[in-house]
Length: 263
Image (tube, rainbow, N blue to C red; front, side):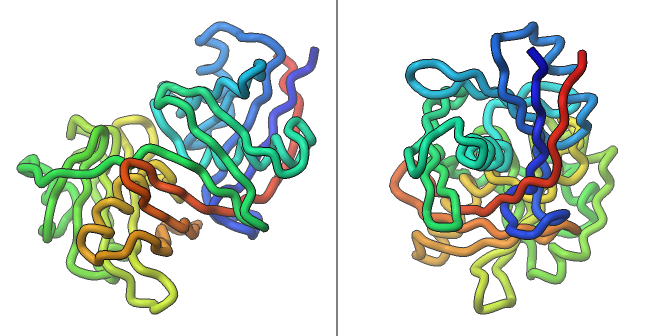
């Protein structure tokens, strides 16, 4: 049977902004090399592959170079496609079975809410190369399960950062998240996320990074519910709600195009 693939812009309500992800609903389970080849062909930060079973959907995420353990925007895009195309009826929640355990997506009006594991950071000794690669001195550096989190002085510093991606790629981590408090009174904090080591120099909007950011900024501000903005060129809004060891990530999504895989 032909395999449909859908491209969705996630964490936005406007096409050509937010973070694009490809969503592929499988009829059976192909070889891993085929999944990786499709992700390389799509050349997006993530391609999501879904396979339905009685208890929900198996979900895997691939960058152009490798499989990853957790991806927020491609999960958001997957939920959007499953509801939009009628694979899941009405307002029913969607259960995804992943490398990071069970993840649940629910509708919240025009928004989609994802139930993800939180990823708190602890203060870490920064690699000597980190400040050189970023071109600025960090205010604070911490490490979660997969990523470094770097607080910078202010939003302007975050926005105008021009990192050395070749140097960043030498740091043994999935990604480096940079962040600061926001200037706007409609946003609590801003961020950017760099992952050259996994083939993503800069990710436009990173849901999984907000599992770390929510925990960090909740500790600094005392707020469990916040609005975040990732200040990449495409930009995107993420609502976060820290609930113990879980984070509810809220976002919107819009379908951009549909195609059929012929190979």
